[in-house]
Length: 186
Image (cartoon, one colour):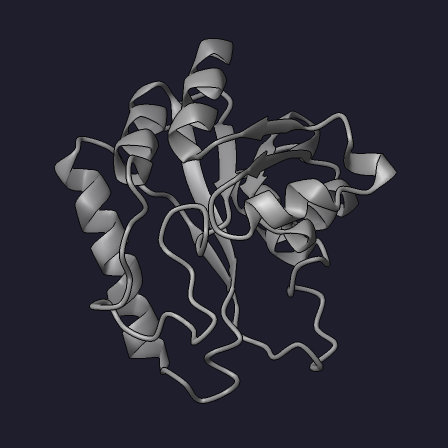
């Protein structure tokens, strides 16, 4: 039996939003460390009716720094931690390409967000995309989604360099604060 209730989709960037980012790349489940409050925030969003999906550039795959099994182990850890808090993580869309590969899925291009919109059959105009880097915000604009910035990860630096097209976006200290505001919308 399928529900006729529309999906309330929320898309999150991964590194710097959900977990600690690293200039050396996050290469294993052991190195994948959630940011304070992020797991609880995802669980709360899920319990409030959001389908929480993830859109993440993972050029470490193309660079040979880790393999698909390591990436799947990181995502299994994320899913297990959120499930332990009573929530659920939906689809995780990954761009495995390097910065010079010219793909359509690597943010700031909108491909990952468009994949998720198709997967969930939603119009992105009503979907927030929470990120910490200019490329996340640019991908949101390019896809027609609502860009939301968090100050974790690269977010503080990104906030200081927002382009004119992004000066009116919502900015939060972290995913927990963004979740509070998004849950109020439900």
